[in-house]
Length: 568
Image 1 (tube, one colour):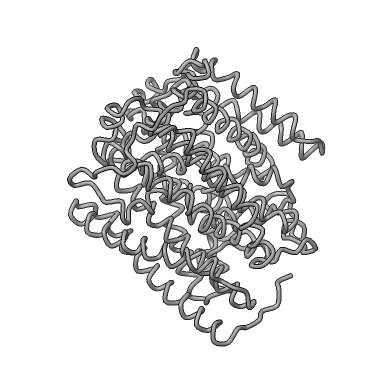
Image 2 (cartoon, rainbow, N blue to C red):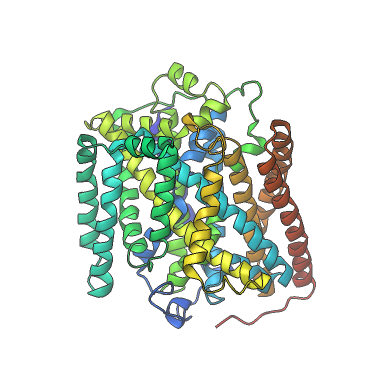
């Protein structure tokens, strides 16, 4: 099977989905209003509420939601074969992620930029808000812990990626000052910034940065040292106004996505690589079956609840015009689907002959433990088809993942700060309300502690980071997506609109994630992972309770639609 054929099939499907289905959602379901005053204008504060050009906002939204997940998830999922993984990416992106991300932005923008957890209290019930906030707290903790370990692994294995990953920070700060303080266009500076980032890649290879000496001095492993340094950086980054670092770096990363996809797809075409993985793989003994685990392993790249947190937590606060929600929300989902496609290709056509693939994916443990390495190696091979040395191409791939993951952690910790403050307000803990530095510290220390648990620091991606913790992250992530869709569905019913676009993926996700949560409970118990067992059980109870609340709200609106007036 020529790999380029998969590119054509996927991109054609995405083109028609945006042209027709997203237009249907915009005009018939969400009914976008170009005259609606968005929170970015109505509540402008120069820090979180900032009207932003749609292309810049797309860059922020995409790179915040992408991170490493649309790469790692598909890179693991091809263990079951490229056909199940690609099918879920295409159908999930078009009919689930696009509806979910797009709708989360619209519903939040129509409610003063409130996050999806707070919205559940307004749309479903007051009790639902508390339940959802707790689930979001668990999800953000898992997201930040997993991505922190992902970045640490890449820095440890690719020390040549450290310099380009660091140099993007001052470049982004300069661009932010240029655009916000001086009111200049961001396009040319961001292109120059991207070129400087790429110029730094061979510099990084020539001058790799190791932290072995620092690690030895403080008595820690190299990976643990990187994890701590990454979270320390995240504390600082998440405290800055969005225009200082987050937005301009996201714009650079948005352009980097285009370049990365272009060179990967062009490399596939020039090399005319073929798929070495089977369409459907025979599962090894003691490895999980793709039903239901495929649908929680590939979250970002198909549908991800974390997107609703970003969409309602930061993106809706920067939306300049409501009609741009289609471009940012649905377009961002398609971009992530394309990145997931690139990961599938790198891990099925970029690893060499069928024998090489079989060795790399001998069982599920090898697939999950080596996912990042398989993507980096495969991408390096594609770039070698273009005359770029494979080692340089591998560093390029590592930089892409690191910069995306860094942005996701920045946004994730920022969102965790918001959630902690809301939980403190509900609990009556006034000492935390308004204490930004203290809340940010808590938002960093909680996932840092999870990332440093025994096993999370083990070599080869084993332990919590890419094994059972990734599975729990996936189930919580998809469960959050289903619950966000339930809020969107109730919101639509209250306005006498057809909710099927949200309800169909909602039912599918709730079934798959509930199944996976129950399987995880048995697995965690059998392996003695008591912390993850407690977390899984707590998430399951909260989710079941919230499903009951949402079902009650559905019945209420179905029997007696409130015909709610549009929010102003």
